[in-house]
Image: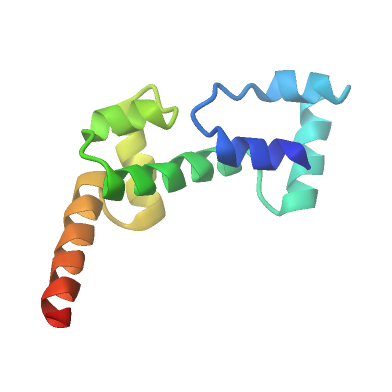
Amino acid sequence: MWVRSRICRNSADDWNIDALAARFSLSRSRFQHLYSDTFGISIAKDIITARLTRAQELLTTTELSVGQIAEAVGFDNAPYFNRQFKAAFGETPLAYRKTYWAKKRNRENIDV
């Protein structure tokens, strides 16, 4: 389904489930049910997962602040982003970034 791939590619977009359902001429509940049955995850959870995955990438490839990353991936509220990130990955975005770079430095030191 093109919707899922588009969500993954454009996670920061303002995804409106009602509008997506209407595009397929389905009720919101029917659309959500079909999405869950097809992909094994709710569309709301899929959107959050796509945003968090993109945030992981930005945390390890940019020097953007956590607030800038939250906004870049589609979260309007940085504290909510922090809670979602911690729930998904077990640490805050800033801790994730620090851990990533510490591990990278350790691997580089071992390779030398």
